[in-house]
Length: 574
Image (tube, rainbow, N blue to C red; front, side, top):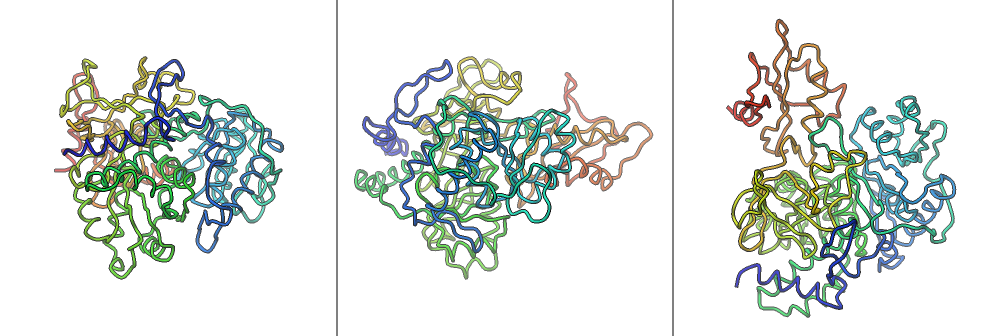
């Protein structure tokens, strides 16, 4: 019996009439989709439905521990303060710019309870980039840590000139604050449930992604988008496990019942929470199922292994380099990793050989892989367990809610199984729009609601998706998306640069690193180190090219004048 039979059987069980994941045809923004019949209309209902007891541990950060009861109280206090003290109205943008502190999680949920739009800003951005995010999103209220408070404060004159009066709530801040800023602990409000009017197609969150334009785009998620992604995550996770039970000839109904009373999931959160992977695919589903989040300020393999042992971590999701770092650690063999059940990869392609390495090295864990984008609120397909072993080059199958197809990029026609083409996605998890960029939105979402990812993929006869090439002009450096056009726009400002093109080159640990090919203006010369220093003044550190290739002749182009980055990659490899 093929894999797809077991998976379909598990999905049939989970989406059957009377199930919490029962599916039905739904109408949303002029489109008809398959959706979840019982999906909550607001994200905040997910918070209210958490079944964890008040005494259950929720957030762990270094030596700090917070229970669900403490979190519930603080979320409600901050939510009411946003409404009464800051005038936040339903749909208003409220920014979050901080590292992986417990307050990031609490702020996000408080914004949902107040009916605002949580704007998840990259905490690695420099001051100029943060100022762009603040003004572009219109975030008049910002939750920031001390470093982000300093950076935003340095740009307040320019932000004010745009017509935005920003108030900052500062987490873990010491010393003097700018006018209009207050410390987190001084923000307090009532404990009553805010009375707000928010519909399923109103805004809930916005994440910024670097794409083929010079500036990051704000990807707007509706309440329905975020809720659907959460339910997809749970359905894929549980469905894959039930499918394995079916394949082994076990009691699927019994396993489904046991899943409801499973021990608390303990998730190590090593990816940044501002990533859609960290927020919508890790923080959200683990919180909503009453799990525990063990937060890391920054990635460190030795610290991660220590936390896995001491906190008895059962699940981990990170970019593939994180898994590779842990397996290669000299202390790996001496650490107790027996509580680990799932080692997930997201944010970047996982090398196929990693499936076997994880299974061989970690006693009770199986490897999982997810494919998704900011534009689908998180996840589109998933692969795991025995099915991942069978098809280690595949990123898996979609859940029942969410269509996939591969099309010919010239004709737009859907291609048969096994043929390469552009991957398109459709469903109530697909984003609403790029904020303030209607033309960019129209370029990727067609009139039938299909999102054209730009990724080149195949779908086999069992429905398993394999990504064979990425969206052009994106460099994925250790899980961080770097938009080539943004880096090119910065480097092109150098007086000696006539032409430049940014692309990715392979890197053993990071997957890719950022490279740039430059052609100097006539009579000028370019020193690679000096060019990197110039770029560092304009870009966040992870976007600065680590490889600079200086060309003595114009960069290779096609007949339309477009630079052939494929040729540049081949030349760099040589």
